[in-house]
Image 1: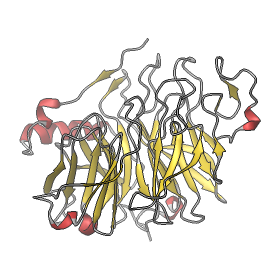
Image 2: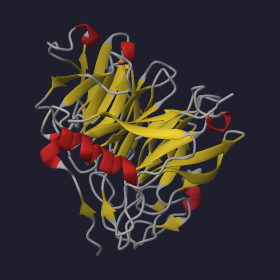
Image 3: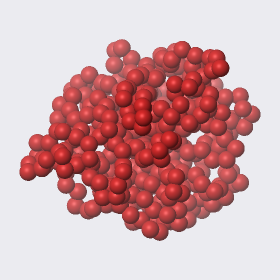
Image 4: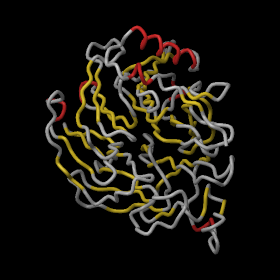
Amino acid sequence: MHIVKVILFASFLANPCLSFALQESHQNILKQLHVPAGFSISVFADNLPNARSLALGDNGIVFVGTGAGDSVYTVQDSDNNGIADKRFIIANRLFMPNGVAYKDGSLYVAEINRIIRFDRITQQLANPPKPVVIYDQLPSEEHHGWKYLRFGPDNKLYTAIGAPCNICEPGKTIFSSLVRLNADGTGSEILARGIRSSVGFDWQPETNALFFTDNGRDYLGDDLPPDELNQWTATGEHFGFPYCHGGDILDSEFGTGKNCRQFTAPVWKFKAHVAPLGMHFYRGERFPKEFKNQLFVAEHGSWNRSIPQGYRVALIKFNQGKPVSEQVFIDGWLTKDHTVIGRPVDILEMPDGSLLISDDALGIIYKVEYKGNNG
C-alpha cells in the first residue's frame, strides 16, 4: 500500500496573523497549482482547521463547516480586495458540523446526529446566539456520518446519511439514504436509498434536476469500483449500494442473487477512489461562456490506492442536460512524487462570479477568478 505524504504547514496555520512565513507558505502552495489560461488562484482565507462545506450568507459572508473538527467559522472580505479580513467562530464543541446552509437570515448546521439553526446570525457574528435544534433523529454513527446540507429549489433542506461501514447491509433504513425535510425540521422523508457516502450535491440550473456525488466502496483493488455522479429523479429510487457498484459491478459479498438493472445507474463514472465531494453548477457570467451551467467537482483524493489519484477540481461538461466528458480544471495538490499538499473539499460560487474552494488538509479557502477577456 502506498503511503501518501501530506504537508500540512500546521505551525503556520495555528497563527491567526498572516505572517511573512505564512504568506511564503501560501505562495509555495499556489506555485504548485495549475489553472486554465486566463484564470488565477489565490488564498482567500486561512486559519480554518478542517475547513469543509461552504455556504454563502448576506453581504459576502461565507460560513465554513468542519468535518474532523468541532467548529463552524465565518469569513468575509469586507473591503473587496480578494482576501477575507474578518473571521469569527460561530460555534465549537459540536459533533463534526460538516454541513452548513443559509436562508432568510439563519444558519443551518448539520452535525452527525442533528440539525441546528442559528437565527439572525449575520447581525451577531461576534456574539452568536445559542442554536435551536430543529431535527435530532439522525443516527450518531461516525463512519460516513458527516452530513452535507443544502436548500433545494423547493425551499426544503436536503441531506444524505452515509453507510456506517465500508460495505454492509445497514440495519436501519435511514442509512445510505437521501433525505429531505422542511426548514423547521418537520416532514422528514427518505427520497432515495443505496447511497454509500454522498458529501456533495447541487441542482442543475436549466432543469432543477438534483445531482449528487457518491464515494464507492474500498478494497476491491486500485481501479474498482468507480466513484459516481448520480441523478435523482423519483422518490423510492435505489442507487445500488451495497449490492451493485457503478451500475454494472455486482458486489462479491452482497451482490449474490441481485441484478444491477434493479438499481439506478450513475450518469457519470469517476475513476476509482478519487473521492468526489463538493460539486457546483456554475451559474455566473464572469467565466467564459463555455463554463456556463457546467459542473465543477472537488476530488478530495484517494487514501489507500497504491498510486494516489484525485486531489484536483474536475470539470464535468454537460450537453442537453447530460454529462458527456470530464477534464481537469485545477490540479497540483498531488505532486509528481506523490506528496499531497492539499485536499479540495467544497466549491462555492460568489456573487462576483468567482469560485471559492475549501481545503481541509491545509485549513484554507482558495479563490479562483477569471482574469482574461470574457467579451
